[in-house]
Length: 330
Image (tube, rainbow, N blue to C red; front, side, top):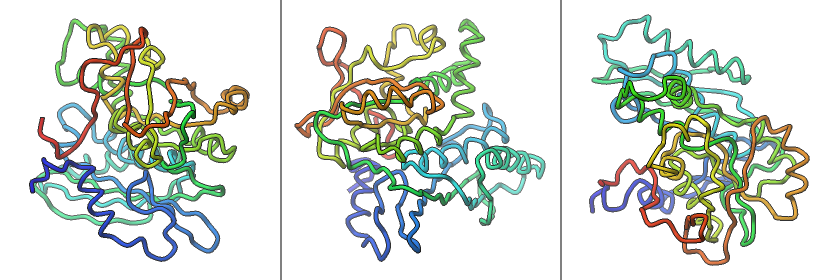
């Protein structure tokens, strides 16, 4: 059977079934980070692989921005579990004709963001390759119970931080190089793509206050990432299209594509979480401390038929609402 048949997440599920959890593993394969017990401490471990030509193009990103984003996407996984980042290992496979100064600029982007978030780079590995490969692993701590994808219940409210679709539309601006677009709006969207913000403060506060029952970061698209929560929690979900938060820059450039980028684009690294309806008041009280706006965009359903999106008239959207999958062939 070809990988294009099972897809990325089908492959992950097969690996998960074959791999035993092991001692001290509270949550293993299948969440934003692994949750490990270590001397009465909750440890979180996440890793990401970035490949030139697959995840990034050096013709439209700087080495500094690439380093920054490498750490940011791992920070976002720790944020989605409600943890605090601590230690980073980084492995690079680099073509021999790269300039040393470029590699140093990459590390400058890594270390700048690391210093802002109390992260120490503690090791890694290097090798030669035909293109640039980046593998990062981040260890975090969680003084309270981490939030997994599996805690949502029917009737729960669904929230998201920030705005959605900015990164995907920013990438579209880079690819098309459309000079007719609003320069200011395009620059904002491109910056959101190159320099994503991991919502560490929001994630930690939601976990500490036990407000988020299930949580994930929006890396592969709102609908697809919400479907991961639905599968883990055995619930369904409905999203109200008109409630999905969009930035002014997005609204000015998205035109006829409407909410498509926001629903399926990915790489916004906002937090998507589920909370009890009775906690709306508590969320209202603490929202100023989250460091980012939140929007209630839907609710969890009793059935487990996945995610549906309805327009302002209550009708389901007619176009496919999927997300990114490395192995699916469109």
